[in-house]
Length: 140
Image (cartoon, rainbow, N blue to C red):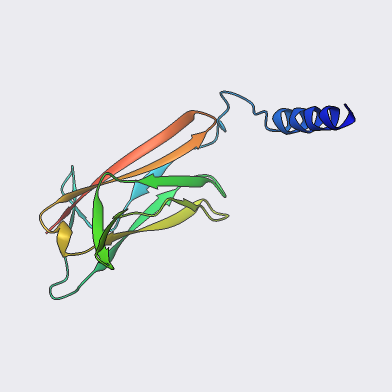
């Protein structure tokens, strides 16, 4: 009986310690996303370097100090390793702003993306509330 009581007590501690405040987002949070590429008013344009097997595009962001920004994209590239095709997004999962609220993210591009338009999505997500920004980059 003592063992059962200890197990129940442990679960109670675990569940109550995981409690979180619902609906909170820092009222000072904001997110601005840009890049130094040519911009035509709707879309950024990246001229892929001729003869290169891959390249990176730098995307800059501004937010509050030490804010975590989550990144995603529906655009994927593939590599073949040991006769297996591995798909991966062209952008990494998350980055943090520095003390001044500035940060950078790299977007991977290779010849598979020539002629495509990449959709890069940045999100600040605090307890279900989110700030979301998207940029489009045409690869030519």
